[in-house]
Length: 273
Image 1 (tube, one colour):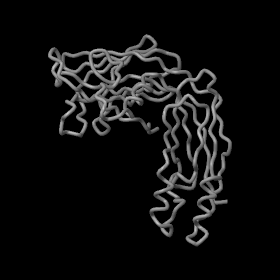
Image 2: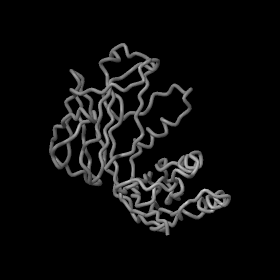
Image 3: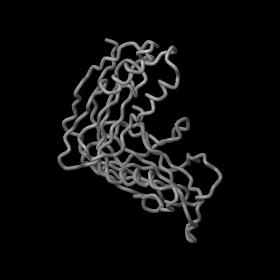
Image 4: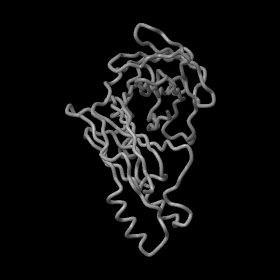
């Protein structure tokens, strides 16, 4: 499963006299309950005024993952520039996991606890009808009606006010566009500008605007329960760019984040009739 995540951006505003920038590094490590371990990346740090906007990944780090009394050594995948495990590591809700990253002589560590699985995930409509769109004088009114009515509401239980976020992914084998070549491009572009990944929220529902999706067919909705570490990272990324605040980090002796997610899924389908 392809994870849709915020890119962790670390900007350093001053040089640490004791730790030169080139000797430090950034950790982006994410565990997903019930999924394989393959979403760990290590990056070089850069000064805030660096002209290089391309991430530089570190391929020779020594990485260990600790869980359930076991130690796992991770390998590097050069095509995806990430570290992964060939072993079937059980990422279990409620369990604590540790991470150790060694780059050169520098060792960084961190711990995270996997959240419990989201509860009560349901959807109001599992089949949404969007009739074929034909270019005609009536099309603007049809689109307005579909924008208001072609929706489905995803709900879950969250009486304790924990943070969640939600993603929507098309899982059809081939594309089956809702807006075909006859429809002016700017119309389809307008209706595809709506987010299909929510911000972290403590709410208990998310209203899916089906006209914001591009294809007829089945979509998978994944609801993630997330830790406060990830929430803090998200809030840091959307802060005013004029605020020179160092992004939050739960990595000891380096920068970055090590956190975990638990999820549940449900699906719906967009059909012509």
